[in-house]
Each structure stands twice: as structure tokens, then as C-alpha cells.
Amino acid sequence: MTPEPAPDLAALAAAVRTCTACPELAATRTQVVVGDVPAGARLLLMGEAPGATEDETGRPFVGRSGQLLDELLAEVGVARADVAVLNTIKCRPPGNRAPSRAESTRCRPWTERQLALAAPAVVVALGLSATRWFLGPTSLAAVRGTVHDARGLRVLPTYHPSAALRWGPDGEPRRLLRDDLALAASLAVGA
Ligand code: SF4
Image (cartoon, rainbow, N blue to C red; front, top):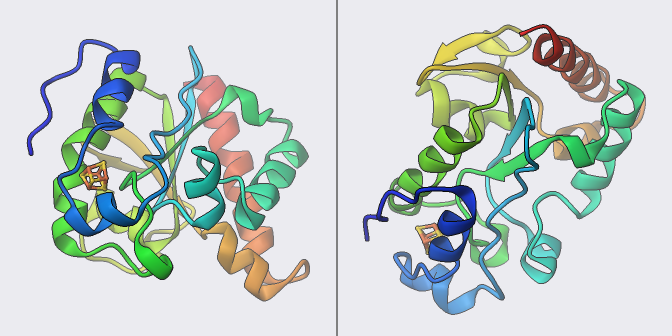
């Protein structure tokens, strides 16, 4: 299914909520997690896919990863309410498996349209999957912490909060994720 070009974010959200282009995801999801795009948001965070808590609540990054993200944003002086948060695909893959290439391809037009309408100054790609969505095949080690031009956007790849949780509060991923969010916040203000 190719989405009609939505004229605004509200129309897009209404359309994506009815999408059944991925049969397995449409059959197993609780709801479509469209994403948060506050008016005027200059910073946008991009994850991979909704998890169980996101599927239940309909909002992106509200589970443990989301709580850490909120904490780190607060540490760098940014309110979550001012930040746009999306995932590359809008429906939870069963068992939190990785999205298939076909699912990612089907959802890409929705996400690209969201990015075009949101027009953020800076995008933070959280984790390898979101990073590759923008930059193509690469490793996080090769691109993390620097700004890349991709699809007309300034994209800063960094760790996914789940990596920071895995390595713990004193681990390098948490420190680098925090540093990268601080850099993104400063770029968003200055852009
Ligand atoms: S993941 Fe995207 S393309 Fe697939 S059913 Fe959900 S909204 Fe549609």
C-alpha cells in the first residue's frame, strides 16, 4: 500500500492508523504507534520499532528505554514534550523481533512523509537499525557521534537506549548517548 501524500501530520496520523500493509503486524498489533511530533519541535529522535509497552499505550519510547531517554534528555536540559519521537516502522513486530526488510520498505513512505512534515533541524538516529535506515549499510562505530547529511536532514547516529540499559549506568553507551543528545540539542538550538 502506498500512502496518499498527507497534507499535514494530523491527516497522516489518521491514515497510518488504518494501515494494514504488513499482514502479520496488522494482525498482531494492539494499535499503530504513529509517533509524537510536537508543534515546532527542532529535535527529532528516531528509533527502530515499537515494543510491548509502546504497542499497549500507542506512544513511542515509553518503556524502560523511553524512561532512560527521558532521564538523559532532562540531564542535557531538554524536555521530552519538546522533542519529536518516531520509529522507522509504526507497528510492533511480534516478540520484538527485528522488522523484516519488506516491513521496513512498506513503512518507509509513512516515515519519510512524517519527516518532511516535521522538518526537524536535527535528527538523532537511535541504534544501528535507525542509523542504517538513513545512511544505508554501515556500522555504528563508523558513524556515531558525528552529523551526516541524509535525505536533506542532519542526522546524528548514536546508541539505542536499550544498549545503554544493557551496559548499565557506568557503561560507555550511556555516557556517549548522553553526550550525543547534548550535541544534538545544541545543534538544534543553533541551527
Ligand atoms: S508497519 Fe507501517 S506499513 Fe506496516 S502495517 Fe504498520 S503502519 Fe503499515
